[in-house]
Image 1 (cartoon, rainbow, N blue to C red):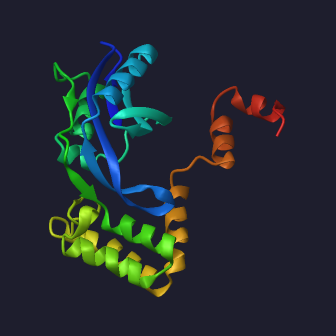
Image 2 (image 1 turned 90 degrees about the vertical axis):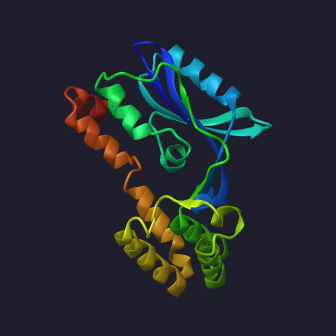
Length: 221
């Protein structure tokens, strides 16, 4: 679930909930279905009000009939494609929030029943799980033929018809996976390394922050 909250009014600006219908690398959601989970939105609004949060917040949870059990919280918005298709434009709303522009009077909630996918992420997930060329081709065939729950979803990462250059990374990654399916872990790991926070990154941030360098040296490693 992704939410956007305004500190000035301690209120929920927008919320969107979705469930995974297709797996990517490491069990990530490579295809999503938007759902109506008002209980999860209510809990998120309470968290935001308590923290006086200003900006995006993402909460992951398991659920039974929409009743959530939260497992993770990140101080940012993620993967806005499904939300945008469901009527929640998180980038536009975030810009309005950050610049003090008018916001909707009532929370904007995503429509349920919207399917989106990343064919590339689905292919990487299939290769990681099975190390099989047939599995990779099967996923791509389903996407091309709009077949199956994930295959029928709208493409949000590499929409080749609307964005022809997006075919380049899709083609390059597909050829690599077909040649060496075991390279799926390398592809996924490379993407994570681009944004993950490592001990070396933390050390750099501390060294660049006034007063932190001395404390970092004093702390035990």
